[in-house]
Length: 226
Image 1 (tube, helix red, strand yellow):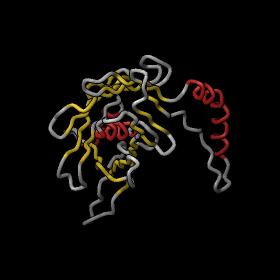
Image 2: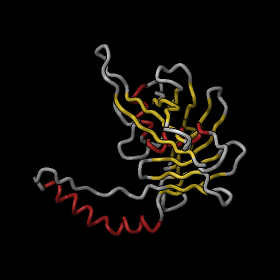
Image 3: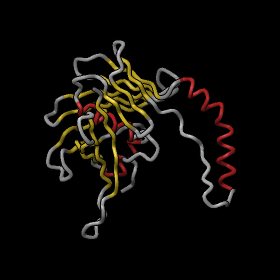
Image 4: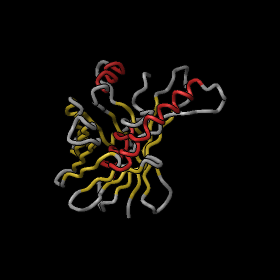
């Protein structure tokens, strides 16, 4: 049976006159009951604070912590960036005791080894699972319709009719990872859900992956200036 992980985030209410940070939560469901929160997400800031994080983020770097509870009493996992240059970024996820959970490599479209963004996920002792963002056929259709979408966007800017919200449709985002003829992981853009199909997989790997994927999506949770 597949398990499903999703991420949601919201800004907490102001307490004591100080704005609280944006906090994310990872929900886990294996079909045996309602989804439950298994981790709380927060950026891990470098010595330079938020400005330094955002500067490094521009090159593809990411760093965050998954906490067991909202009071930060225990770490579940930590993601760090090994390298990020030339459109290729390598990340590693570690458990609470420093054990390696998995390695993620993101090769940006047209900068790595293909026309689509390539994601490689590797668990310790396991084969590489490779997935590509979107299907070729949907990308071709998206590019063919792009000029029309741009025209719609331009007209919507000058159209003063209330409620008329034009815009360019988002590109294909579904990712299916393949390893040894199997599909251990699948990200579905509808609902931003990560499905873990491989039995016995470490749920922490999936939790880190869904959070990492959401840092590269529109309205990314980790791009705030506060």
